Image (cartoon, rainbow, N blue to C red):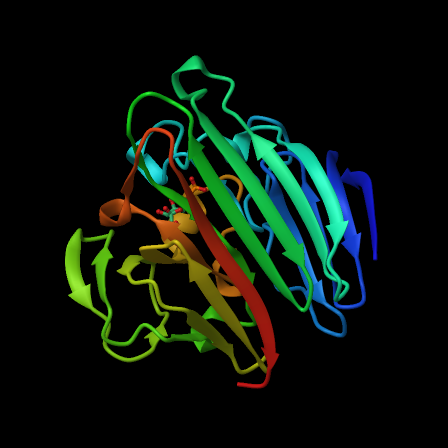
Length: 277
Ligand code: TA6
């Protein structure tokens, strides 16, 4: 196993290499920007037009949306992905996986009562465990996401399984629906599935299935901007929607929860590549 701090697009990052895989995590946003199991192609996707600067979100990888999701606060998707985290540890498990630890407390007095601890385990799978502690005197309505952007061959050929029969909020028309069968893509998709279930991204052309497991999560967000929304995002190429999909372990919209004063909650996602479909 080896870990080293080096530059990644002008940002300081932790580079991890071990017998199972390679990964890169920027200190900016505690943002996993790359994960590739040995002998496999990259699992994550980063826009060719992304910003790479303090105060701006990286468009891709695994943005940490915290301590709110989307428009539940401003700026959208919270403070954590815009801020510098500190690395608090780097160890190896007995079976050779690499474990990185990071911490973040918002600089603003308004949210300084919240503490984020992130544990990232890099092995055959990639596991992120985001622990939030409410050190304040008041309860806090918490929403969050590990907003993973996955690399796919062609969105039009990809399907997502495991959510059949699950109710969801279609955020585009603000209606409640029930998933019928596998999720396929032919237009902008922005849905909040009310479930703790795992999901799978099935990619025939890459001949792989990506298993997205999770814990401490009421919501799974599935997003692809398609062409019109892509054109409206400066940090996203007009045609890049063909090559990515977001499947996010979250607590979002109706999945937000009350984090009582003095209590903690951990949101986890585990990403595994399986050869074949
Ligand atoms: O997770 C889906 C979503 O909330 C979409 O509505 C879209 O806004 C996406 O996140 C990206 O958000 P961002 O703030 O990074 O542009």
